[in-house]
Length: 276
Length: 346
Image (tube, rainbow over all chains, first blue to last red; front, side):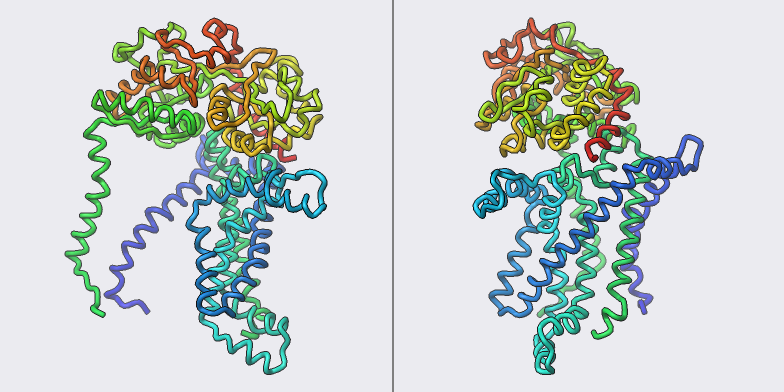
């Protein structure tokens, strides 16, 4: 329970939250319902009335979920490697995880242009292996964008997993091994439930980051792969239709929120965490 | 270890000190009379900062160059009515019409500009001086593709298949090119259905659609594309970076757009803003800006053209450029943007 004397220290944070989070959010929601004659649902009607917009929303959610899956598949082995490693190897893993985060997202995105391009290492490697006869470009493809997003957002899932595993003794897996469990059984019945809270934190961060990553989506995805942030930017910065932009932002907020709640519920399912 | 304690009095003093330090640069700037000028990013931003800052300093003013595309400038000024984030805007006639319609800019007082008389009457706008004419055309990499004759060539000659990049209708460069293409393949400059049909019939062109000319510059450098719609300034910049880039005027004529500096309504630093405007049309500045990598066409009569600018366009040729009907474009632009985006996304 909060002590009565501690409350004043919370007040500045509450005021800041109201001033810089709740109020702008309320303004945004208000804008989305504002019309020339007062309250209106017109902007939501316009958004959902256009099949293109709905497809963009689905594409955005799909990109977020695909990145969550991709970063999980890459992040879990790295986190487990960290868990099983000695002090020096752990420092190296932490260093390699943090260094990309210290580089601007814009720089990392532009580096991916080189990697995914016709003269990039992927194209060169595929040609060297004889898998393709001519240079190929993964620019402006959803797969190329997914690769870039997975690399950019990977630290967001590795760090929570490492935080969880750092508090977990390695003896847990040794005990399971002694009891006769194989590696997969140890992973599924012991480690996975233990890592779920970290995974959930990572999923939320990765999903939120991917679905709102305007620069990477625009540069790597190109104009053929349209996602909600580009739609909002177009309405605000090009067409100056702010009520519609606000409605799209609210729709993104609600749909993202629903998916995050769904992820939380799945991760707390008793069949998944029952062994933890 | 000794505990770190801080009293409420010390905390208050610390907060007040931090606030004072944070406010210091703003007060210092205000005292010096600093113009906050919105300028296009990239070449414009670099060129204007280098050429105009020293001139304004000599006159006792500061200059903050704020890079933003014309549409973004409009959006930001619209977002803060009565308290514009910029003292001046940099725009083409299309955006100028929108700014006038929304009461975002004001007429200027030419008597406050010493260099006003150095401009030809066509460049003396009541809403601000024309600082350059952007001449548009086609940029190509001669190592990758043959020299295009014009827009028709790009769709009909198989040598360009998969090597041409386009942008959406939000870009002035793109919308001017599409108006010309509509004239060639349709019934007139606003017949965009003909342009959309052309893209549907040539889907390989849709693969090269990206968000902006800036992205195209990056892709051109990486050899990902070989042709894009550009201004002479884009090609000058690419050449200055050592790229194999050439500019070609389309056979149907080069679309052109005057670029003007406008005074925002409610500009806070009027004196500095006028000093900045005057510096931008001065001989000293335009003599610098006509050189690589900017190579801006000078509107000051006293500034001689360089051979490389004359290779793009001469003063006599300016009258023969294609100047689009921005009123017609603005009327249809939102519809075109939405339709093209949906077409590109497939």
